[in-house]
Length: 418
Image (cartoon, rainbow, N blue to C red; front, side, top):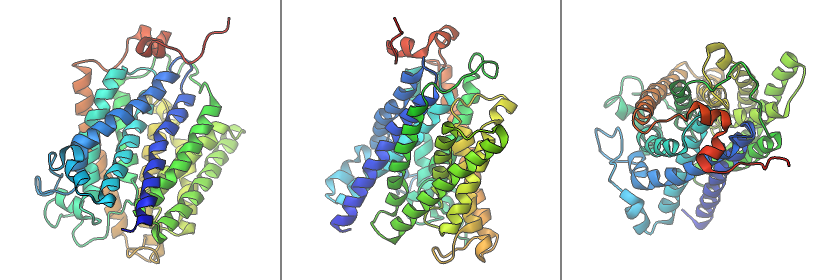
C-alpha cells in the first residue's frame, strides 16, 4: 500500500475513534440530567476497556487462524499485537488499530439500552468480556478470512450448507458485526436488568437536545471514516461509500420527520438526530454495494422503520432506554437485507433481486443476520448473568431515584441553582 492509502486509513481510524465521544454527547443528551455523566462515562469507559480487550485477545480472535476449523482466530496468536507492530508493516499496524475503533464503538452502542440503572464497574467488566467473546468472533466470521463468505463457511463446516457456492454474505462496514450485534446485545441487557422505576408511567425526556444534535453531527462526520475508510484505500470504493453514506442519511432524516409529522403533527430535532443515526446504520453494510437510487431507498425506509420501531418498547414492555433496538437492530437488519434487494450489478458481481439477481443473495444475507442474532443473544445473556450473580449489574432503587451520577462518580453535571 502506498503512503497515500496509509494516510487515508490513519485519518479514517481517527474519525471512527471520534464517533465514540460523539456517541457520548448523543446518549448524554438523551438521558435525564441526573444520569448524563454516567451515560457519557460509559462511552469513555468503552474506549478504555475496549482497547485493552482488542489488543490482548480481540485482534487475534478476529483475525485469521486455524483454531477450531477457522471458526475463530487463535486467541494468543498475536497477544498484545506484538507480532503486528514488530513486523514494521505500516498498513498492517494501522489496520489493527482501525479494527480497535470498530470494536470500541460497537460495545459503546449497547450502553444506551441500560441508561440510568447499571453499575459503572460492572459495565466495564461487561464491555471487556463482550469485545473478546462476542464482537471478535462475529468479526472473524464476516471479515477475518478476508473473503466474503469464507468465515461463515468455516462456522457451518467445510463447504457450509448455507453459503457454499452462493454469493456473500456482504457486510462492507458492519451491518451484522456492529449494528445487529449491538442491537441484540442491547435488547438482552435491557431485559436482564429490567425496566427503570417509572418506565411507561412518567416522562423520561432528553435533558439536553443540543447535546443530541451535536452528538449526531459528530457521529455523521466520523461515519465517513467508518464506511469510506472500510475500503482500506482512497479509491472508487471509498468514493462510492462516501456518496451513499451522505445520500442515505439525508433521506433517513426525511423519512423519520415524515412519520413524526403525520403521526404527531410536529417534526422534532430529536427525530432529525435519530434519523441521522438510522440512515447511517442502514447504509453501513451496503454502502459499497448499491448505487445512489439504492441508497435513497435504503435511507428513506430506514428512517420510516426506525421511527415506528422505537415505540415498540412500550407495547412489549422492555426498557431500551435510548432506542438501541429500534435504531441499530432494526436499521441494521434492514440495511443487511436490502443488499439482497437493491445491490447494483454494476458495482458488485452479485446483483440484488430488483437489479436482475435471484433470491439467493437475499437468503444468504438473512442467514448471516440470523446466525449473528442467535450467537449474540446467547453469548450476551451468559456474560450478563455471570456479572449479575457475582458482582451485581444494577444499582439499587435508591441510587436510581436519587441519581446515578452522584452515587457512581461522586459528581453531578449541573450545579443546582442557588
